[in-house]
Amino acid sequence: MAYPVVAIVGRPNVGKSTIFNRIAGDRISIVEDTPGVTRDRIYTRAEWLTHEFRLIDTGGIEMSDEPFMSEIKQQAEIAMDEADVIIFMVSGREGLTDADEQVAKLLYKTNKPVVLAVNKVDNFEMRNDIFDFYALGLGEPYPISGSHGTGLGDLMDAVVANFPVDDGVPDDDTIRFSFIGRPNVGKSSLVNALLGEDRVIVSDIAGTTRDAVDTKFVTAEGDEFTMVDTAGIRKRGKVYENTEKYSVMRAMRAIDDSNVVLMVLNAEEGIREQDKHVAGYAHEAGRAVIIVVNKWDTLDKDNHTMKEFEDLIRTEFQYLAYAPIIFVSAKTKQRLNNLPALIKRVNENHQRRIQSATLNEVIMDALALNPAPNRSGKRLRVYYATQVSIQPPTFVVFVNDPELMHFSYERFLENQIRKAFDFEGTPVHIIKRART
Image 1: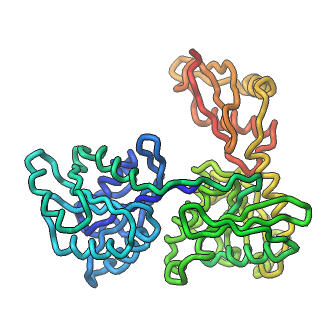
Image 2: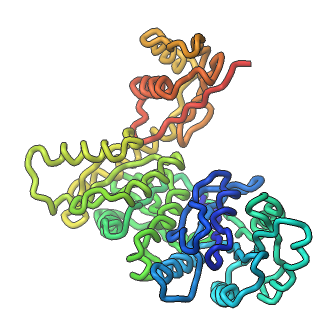
């Protein structure tokens, strides 16, 4: 399902990044007492009680022509456009300012739920000074302190109370997949080429909480798929598509709604940092992944070109070593007829279950092949393993002490599992647990 999106906005230097880090539970945003430090939107997945959501930190909105300020304002406006709920942050230490009122005017136009957070209220006496913020016309101001972490509970309760009702993903048996990647890598062309090549469109499914349309279609072989709306294909024009980092939010929503994610690279341009950022979200979300190199027809090739490009991908995307790579052309339709079968196979691997008896045979053979080394004078003992979930396949390994299992040995066990069973295209998660 697509998680609700929460954007934190406000003028510069009111403590947005500090609160972002508090809610996310980690120091993700750079925190510095200088206006304009957070120039781009920063994304993470967060959780409050039983609610999971996407959280966006934005640069401060300031109506000036200073360096970066127009870009920061544009980035913040895009984040507001994508958000389901907006946290508008002001400073209780500085009181109500003209800049706060200007930001409030922008928020009126969004027609989105806005929760007003008054930051830097570091003691009880300062609470008496927050009532001026009622003048913004955005409802009750919630006093919080980024330094001490106080007041966040009431704030987040108000935020999740405004989450849209999730009707869920359409209940069908089709394989849901999406193309993700930077703008101009050819996602739209791939969609059009795939749908136009001997495909029968069955229906258009309206999105549940967003203005997207997912396309259901069947192949000539009778396999059913649903193509999830993806970055920049249908929404809102070139100004957004040309803002490269805007594609990240679109990709994250498409990833949440997909069983299989097709990460699209541009063969002409090679690999960019943004490619790695977008692919990392799919990996962290535990989705099955296929790497699609588009515009392959545009390169001058020899017998080594494909191998060299594949080696480059494996070097730059080491965390996606499990993902198959396919070289295609939306223009000439080269190898596009192979995509549906590959998506189907990868999805089956993503849902693969292994019986415990068979799994433990593999684990015991692995231990015999490469016994666990000693750590601090103690030896790791692996008792048994069992699969606890799919999408992605997740295994719990019971040991005498989880601290004794080094990440390299965990990787060794994963590789042995992959050698024994076909998990191409899907991440494999291993959870270490002490036997009780």
